[in-house]
Amino acid sequence: MIKFPRAEFFDIFGVVIFTTITLLSGWAIVTGLQIPNWGLVFLFFTGLFGILIDGANVNRAYNQNK
Image 1: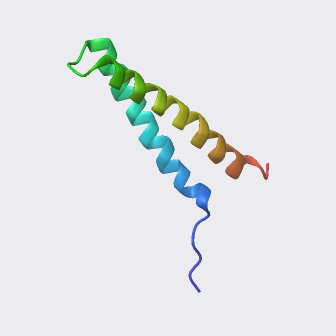
Image 2: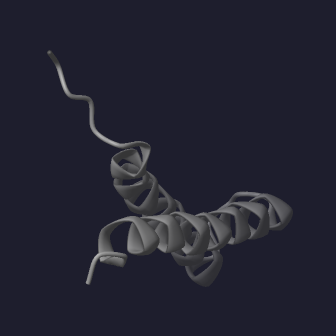
């Protein structure tokens, strides 16, 4: 029988993706890249909230037994 990973395992990928979005949009804001400012702010806050939510899920899933 195949044992599938728990759903929280995939939140690790979400943390990586949201960290990437946050770093790239933050870099673009600082360097003045030619992207509309509202788009960069949206990406930045999406990334930030994604990191917090997925990070909390990963933390809860893997540190609950300690």
